[in-house]
Length: 398
Image 1: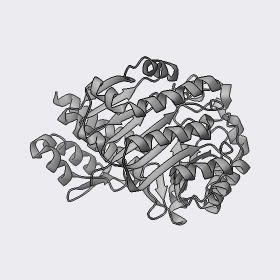
Image 2 (image 1 turned 180 degrees about the vertical axis):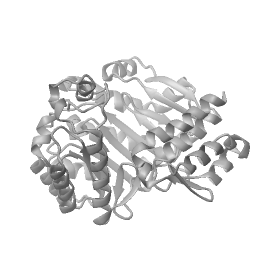
Image 3 (image 1 turned 90 degrees about the vertical axis):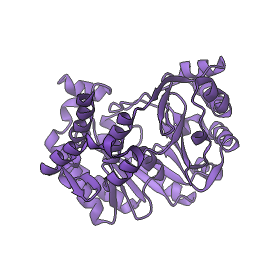
Image 4 (image 1 turned 135 degrees about the vertical axis):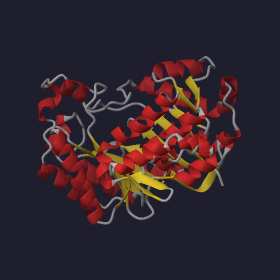
């Protein structure tokens, strides 16, 4: 049976971390309250809004088998408001059982009462933004929690009945050393979450820290960010360590115990349909992609006027779809199935990418076994450069 994923965006935090390159913001409670009301309205009026925008589709009426409330720090909205938002989802969509329902939390942002309340809504997976188990590193990037808070949040989640927990770690935070990184990995082993995400700090101008590093400045502890060699080593240490304690890597940044890979995130990489609600949320129906107004205030104002929250709708060409098939699918350790691509788009449409696949395989960056193509293990860290080869091919083909 074909199914649908649903994502709810909560773009608010108690403070803005220096490494954050998302649109999350610190806001007053009245702003958060209006935003929560707008979310309820968008969900309740989805059919009208979609029809008005010309994106009504039978695909978007499929039963939901994954839901994800992320951000930001969703608990900042409060249990009562979040409960009403989830109730609207249940009224509007048919939930397919079993449904993987994830809630993101920051350590210390959710007490046991809140977590038990979330369980009553159907939330059965918790994603905890630990980032590091070094208090010094956490303070350096402006995190409000400590390593002890992460331990306590995991304990609370277990007591509240969560048997599917994910922890996030970030490699190459300011002041991070081999010793502190290894201690963060050992802390993960002791807590034994079912899922672990390992991200490498992105040095780009979209975050205060990244921009300061690019300017060779010293604010936000920018001078203490480890170099690229450390980034590569930290990633490989994490891969080896997690593999050694029973986790299977199934995507560039994601590791799971058997049976606990994120079904929701796999929808993104496998080009399956999903709906996003909230400011800046994105949606995909298999043929079109669209995005919501990014500003929470403007998003709420548009809905209050009875207008659609959509700001961009793009219909994908065949070339767009094949490009995404490689760009997203190759993030998975298992790679992509070319036989599936031929069934979807035909031999002739796929043919233009065969020389690129052959060239990358010849440079030992891709591994091809019959119709299965995947990144070589040593190429995971340069995946963006490999993906670029597919994008260049499309441009050259026009």
